[in-house]
Length: 166
Image 1 (cartoon, rainbow, N blue to C red):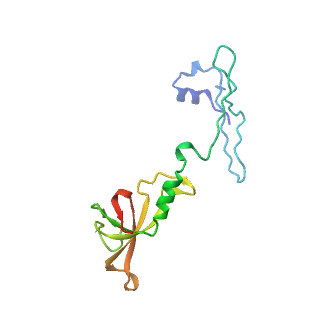
Image 2: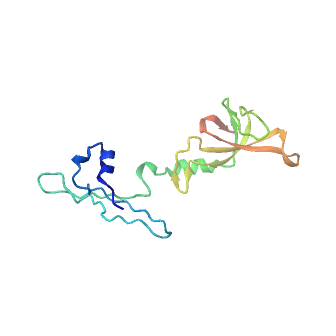
Image 3: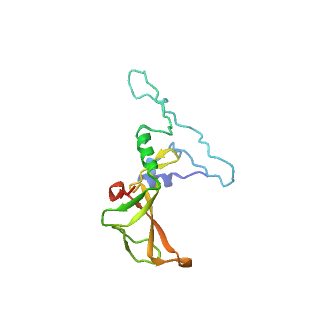
């Protein structure tokens, strides 16, 4: 499918008389509908193709895809310390309300005792940006759920929002 010069003039905001060549150097994009076919560009771009320096010498650049970056590296002592505390009892020491507990419109966690269940700042050996990295499980004794058992719920907290009781 060929594109007319009028199409390019409308996109580039140029009059038709200024466009003499219909092939403006734009790469044609092809789309495939069939499964198991991949897109392969006709003219791949190489960084070392053109050298902007006037001296004629050009250092080629290389781009590497790294799975572990320096800022993503994990401090093993910090992770071991956090994971060793899993299963500990904790008490919320700051005023904190949550609104996601079933059968309750809001619940105040201040002074509640819970069980530290998970440290979520590391996922599959890589640090993630969890701003509330500790998952704590609480029991709402004042509300009964199915089978008359109290409702259990979890909340994500920062380390400065609770204290360890063990």
